[in-house]
Image 1: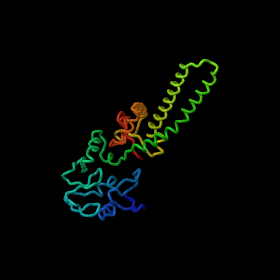
Image 2: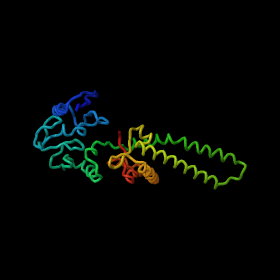
Image 3: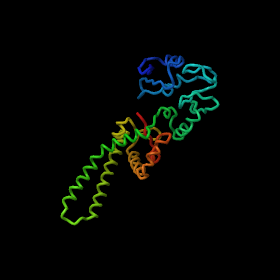
Image 4: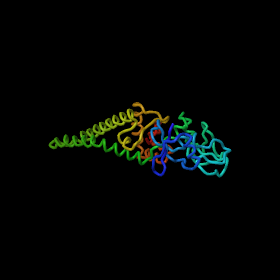
Length: 263
């Protein structure tokens, strides 16, 4: 099957599997060179898209398939990060050499039953891009809140001659906030359950998936809404932990075993 690749910012190809290996051997490709072929959803680094074509075939060869001599003939290229590592410092998982840095992520994916090849091809969405998606969703939902509180002001303004009733005021506040929560719940449950992303996430090219990288269901989307409700009660700490987690998970991702990935 023919491959296309990016070189100096330009698309090149098509080339065959053999030609792609030759380019890697000659040093024309780097581990992070983007490649694509029919059937792939998006461009990916060659070390992830075609490791069998551009990785060393044995530990005894003194040349790297990415060009140049290896500092150590026993070096291997980690299937996770693409760095050269001594064969004594790697472990083998599903016939892939993995360095110590990448090992925790690989072990976790194994525990969750995710194929290693799927785990290495996923780019998790970071804190700021998720914040941007959340901000966009907030703008979309803001007319609902403003409209309801505008109606509340009209209703209360019609009773200016009557003695102020604090219980009626707080009752309105509770009902309006409850209605806003119900609209938000329906919004998130529908879009995440149906499309895997809210409009805000779609605009930022993000998608919500399960821990096994499977499609979301309405039930899990509904549960994730309430998980995020719990996150909101942590004074935003539950959101901030996504900036430090290896898979960019917020508290509600931990609760519902979900991930937010780039697409």
